[in-house]
Image (cartoon, rainbow, N blue to C red):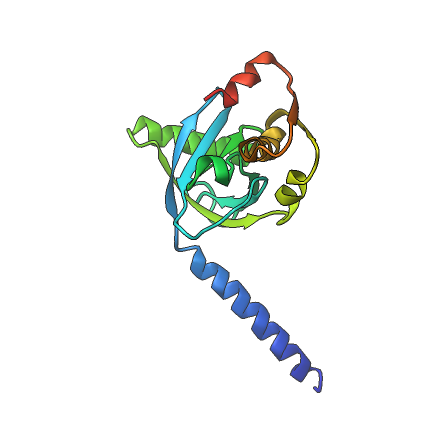
Amino acid sequence: KGAIIYLVPGIAVYSIDKLMGLLSYRKSAPAKTRMVSSDVMELTFDIEPGVEYKAGDYVFLNVPGVSFLEWHPFSLTSAPNVNGNKVFFHLKDSGTWTKNVIEAAKTEARDGDNTLNVRLDGFYGNTDLFEHLQRKDQTLLVGGGIGVTPMISLAMGLCQAGTAPVTLIWVVRSIDEFSIFST
């Protein structure tokens, strides 16, 4: 009987947190899509002035047309000091959810619309990683497959800053994968 006074505030805070999250589910925005290879799609969207992110950040992505409640993290490929207010990241067809997202984008493209309604939660990441790397005499970044995306973001940002040499080592299964980031 006495425990209820301790449970109610916790349950109330938890409920408010979940309700606020559900309210944000109503908002989605179109993102431009482009297939850069047979199994990799680039998603691009513009951010409003005042919204900031850093090289190496990541976002949580939800595609309501695929799954209303399923969110997945994706590292950004773009860097703010290189790409301005354009943010982009890459999805590889490596599981059921990403396959469904790519199929949804292809369906929209067949209908003449290269956009996909998405919800984003972010930007997240190590807030001082980029600044820390800028203070180094040189930087070596290593990535494999599609997992190279945060390294590309950091490399582009560091090269644009021009503070020190940057080396990017990218391990891939086939030479065809190099075309993913050719544009």
